[in-house]
Length: 204
View 1 (tube, rainbow, N blue to C red):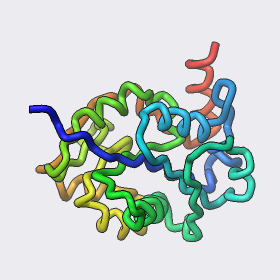
View 2 (view 1 turned 90 degrees about the vertical axis):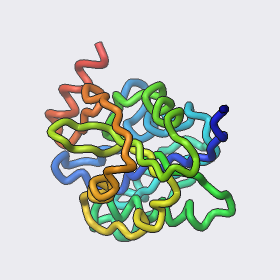
View 3 (view 1 turned 30 degrees about the vertical axis):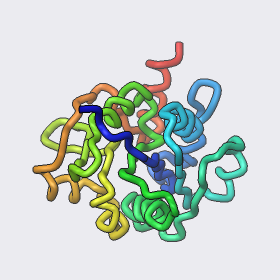
């Protein structure tokens, strides 16, 4: 039986202050672009209808530097509350849209090694109406983003308020979670040392 074609939105929370880095992480160079623009380009390659970016701490600095596209840019006034609050802002926007989205795929700008092929694999594993969460394995039993959430979880995602993002929701819904192990690609950038190491390894 052919799977029902799904309507999935892509959400990129990018509102943090990058305190450990000391400058806007979103604007760090990645090849010929920036980490955030690279994430947007990756999302656009998935050929889904909606890409939403949530800015916060450096909204006025970042927004003018994003290329003109159909990407929806939102502002999280409560960005200090952490990643969960930015996910909540993005999912609330999607929930209130006229489009009836089947799921949301959440990706982060500080995971630049995540490629469209990996994300397309997530989308291909999604089945409408099965209450799925498709998450990435981090090792040590932890799971996180990139992660795809069925619309069943939209209200819970809208209720997120802390810096743990959606990890608690993933843990609570373990029976519905499908895990993809792409650990070498899950390389978060939190410090200048992290950035220098990953940039040097991927740009010779």
